[in-house]
Length: 284
Image: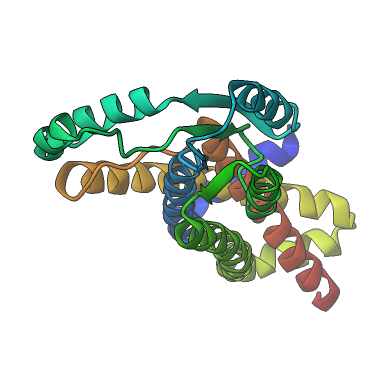
């Protein structure tokens, strides 16, 4: 209780320095919040594209029904395959007439159905990667009655490359922003501690232990981090609403991310304050 009273009293005595520390925490976490918002929406966009990854296996016209059934069952048994749908020539023609109305007359006047029968292979969530696509495609190609296998190789490769680049960029920039945030918060709290150096010196003269001196500063750092974290959340939300209203639709980050950000602000404050007061106690 004593440490909490001292921390609150310090805030009242020097609201400007406390506000400065909280503002720096908020600024650092606001940058992290914007980065998190962009990262989350990029992840959603890539996931939406990834869900459309599908393998289409075109079959020869002379394939027997028994061969179709056997291949469909064997491909369905591959662990990463969710479903194998058979599309007959008649179904393919009906789809083409519906999806391509501009060519409806051409399809209706054709004496022979020019479209092939096929398998549409849907992969399980989490298994839509380059390795699985290549392996399932190779398994389908092995059948002698398979004429061609298509899955949009070029854009699938670009999709998975973009996902890897996005993951690496997220890790690198996230670590960089974390370090910048820690430096900013530590500098702000070091200023606040330096302004109270006389108070610390007097406490040392009367025999106060380092832990007794340190606790109010740690609580003050946690309080600054908490205020800064909440303010950063508000700034991030206002930025999100502005982008959503005036630019384009984006998704709001999960609640868990917000809680982690606020807790991170408090931890930043405690750690930075602890390092600053520890260094100052060595000099006193």
